[in-house]
Length: 223
Picture 1 (cartoon, rainbow, N blue to C red):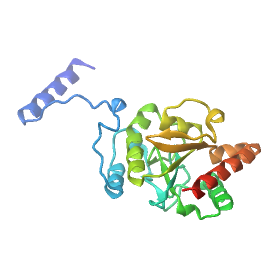
Picture 2: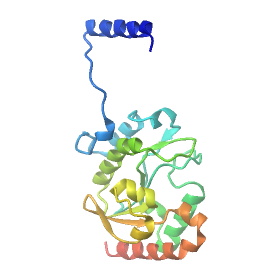
Picture 3: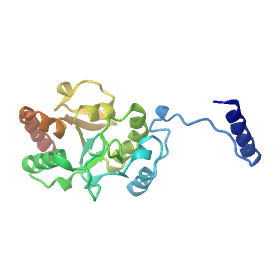
Picture 4: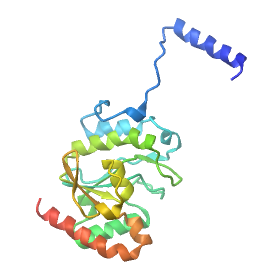
């Protein structure tokens, strides 16, 4: 930074001080936790807050926000990492070949319409390019999902794939170690299963995925 630029910045800063503005240190969003954020206690206001969020870089590149899909009264919530880049006019979560496969798995094995369940993502911003979210982006967005789950109050969370499970629970074990086993997140049962996109790439794993869906069916029937 040149001396001339520094002088301009200082002059602008002094002008703001004279107008009554005060300097505040930057918010360290990486250090935020759910107790630091005062979030709305209803889904409508929470969704509005999400749609106007600018906590991370994703807000600059998003094409839209996708808050949720499905039945808010469902005792079972399916959670994924982030919206698909597949373009869809109604901003649905279950789109593309992966979404189609999950719908078939639900309706063919659980014998109920997929829209009887609730679907949400950790990351709410839909982008036009595929990317792995950064820890900063996860830390910014995860409190919104935590609040969503608090308001929905499900009995069971189904995490789709290894990354979703890790980002939600901070458990870094691979999917083979945790798949099909019940764990806890904020006193709610969590069942990790294979992501539909993994099954599309690895059809041989569909047998294990079928057994996982049978387990979900059994848990559903006992609720």
